[in-house]
Length: 518
Image (tube, rainbow, N blue to C red; front, side):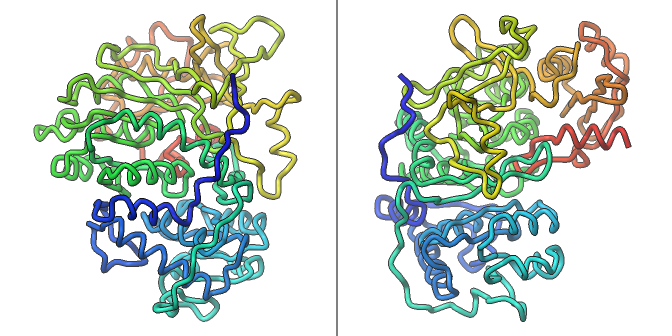
């Protein structure tokens, strides 16, 4: 039976590292970058040192005027100090509002306006070079995590402030605000409570509890995503060493993995696609990986196949979680080496018993089938409780009987497994599933690193392709691979770095379609 409310006391963001340090103080966190707020700590840091850093900055924030329940919009240069500062804000009693470093200044200003009243915590570079002057009008105060500015309070000037006790927010009080992926426009600001964050943490922690051996966890997850909170907590509570990557470039990643030999990898689907070439590295950087974990989106079968076969561990698993920023993970599936490169990659799994549920509703009154997919609705104790300043958009995704509409279309098979076929806004009439077609093309054409099928002029499907080292596409091989698929326009070749992407490396399909039309 689905439990809409899970009894818990909330995750307690401000004391996550303190509690982890109480259990495993000498456990190590390795970074591939220096912390902007504490470059002197180096790139191998103990959990106890990180807990002390959070305590230090919580005291500075309190001295700067952050009070119980006040929002603090955090927008700074990319790095692991983003979640550390979020923990510090929470420890001071504030509510962190995390905005991606990749957002443009105008978008940040608008999201700050929606969050008012709120402090703005940024850095000197962002404030001087990217953010418009309107942020000073919207913000209660402007605080600088690094650097100085005459119109802002620099936290560096508050070093040595007397430490303060952590402030605990009630379990149902807003505890964290993150933005949605923004694949269809300006992101929404999703409000999470301590209770909803705990509900997201529990099923994943239960799965990791089955891991008996102490493993090094390598993580490349957007630092402003709610997923990073549970990933840190799950790893450090168990005493697993943590390797945090800001840079996902394959050569850089291979160098780190060859040296540190992680046993668990956590990343977004597009990062795993980048890392396919690690399977060919003679140093075997993936040899010790026992568990691969991909968050929130279906992943291409070719990627799963290549990575699992690069592991030299007995019976490695690839765990796929499906959900969204608003809900947390809702369903899960696991793949083994027995799955072939052309397996059905649209199967995203089954709900977490007692914690999440899913249904598929007809769009047109006809039965839901693979050829006539329906709306995917879910229930989850981890669902965000509101969209900040946009109650009507939140209410629009809630059905009359209390289910949350994901914006995706799919179907369930006789075993209850969910299949994701497309985003609702990306459906191309008469074509079928664009994601299934992309899986087929990637399985047949190993030279492709990405293929995205979008609606082009007059509604005709246009495939946008990227190749390894940007080599010219083999048109004969393409024609052979696409022969069994619905009619498409000729492929358009782009560099992968030119594709419009979100903070979690999702391709902004609607924006890509507009760019093609222009």
